Length: 456
Image (cartoon, rainbow, N blue to C red; front, side):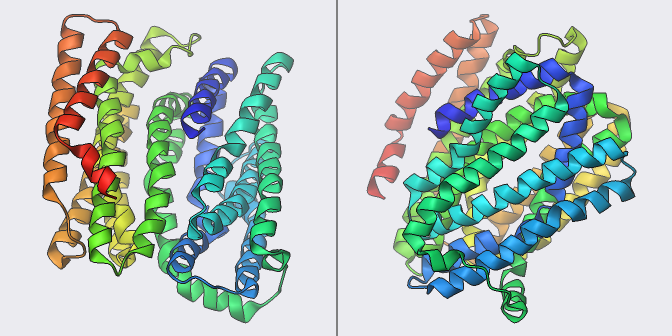
């Protein structure tokens, strides 16, 4: 369902941008990124901490769940009003602040849904978690199609997103109450317990805020430094990176729960690491190579864009997918460290990566435009991914099967050569993708990568 619903939603989002224009969509992208920068105030690390703790320690009483739920509910109520203050201080006008409030409200509903999903993941209920992960996208697809018939605008699109997130939350509260008892969702005002939660979860909260800054600071800086039009163009390119990275954000949280569950069992943990590298690596390698040779094909729905705008987005996109290629090999290691005690190290490295990204943006944006932000993203991701490898090897944090990395590198070389050859002989994109896909499947089997999944 994820592989069906989310691509449809992605295509519709392209159509939304094409309908409302790059400037209006650029404003939405900047406001959305600004809200995401402060999303840590909605979570404070609770979701990730709850997944890790309850996966490793079964048998938690309903009152423990209730305490966490009450804390999350208060955070969700405060957050939209806090963002109004942020928007005012930054200098947004009244109409823009109203849109920022609505975007922030949708995030409040989203984080409550993520809390429920964290409980599903902790109790290893991955099927219902997957359904919850696509519910908002499904409702958004239906609502967006309706808006296209009525006449879509930036305002009614943002309003739709609020309604969609509230509906998704209400739908999955019902099975959650049945699975975990109504007492788990009762409200308790308990400041002392909430202080204890913050003490326990702040390492995860710091990871959340740092990842938010790492991922969204570019969009905000582009809008402030280059304007709404440039922000819209960058959003058009970044959307595709974000979309394909969504595959990892669907898969890796499941591995996060498994890493936490088996952290004291080295043999099983080693198998899960290998499996996570293969499952997350092969698709990301394939799509990265596709974008480098046929990336312009992804902008087919932006028919109202000029050739110069398409060319600028394509150039930016191809650079951004250098970061996706890096994540293909190393994203699983970051999830491993988060689940097994490496939070503090990740926080330190993320701070360094953010500093690198911001400094490079200041230097490169006036010089290279939106491609400068893409270059900064790739360099900062090289830094953070290298730090994961350094920590694991230096501290012997977990046993790694180096042959898996070597095989993935060989598979990447084969994929690159195949797409290069197809592009050189001017094969159409779908024939090049099909041919390369068959080669990737064949060599994956020939390299026995499937056996590492089978043994798990």
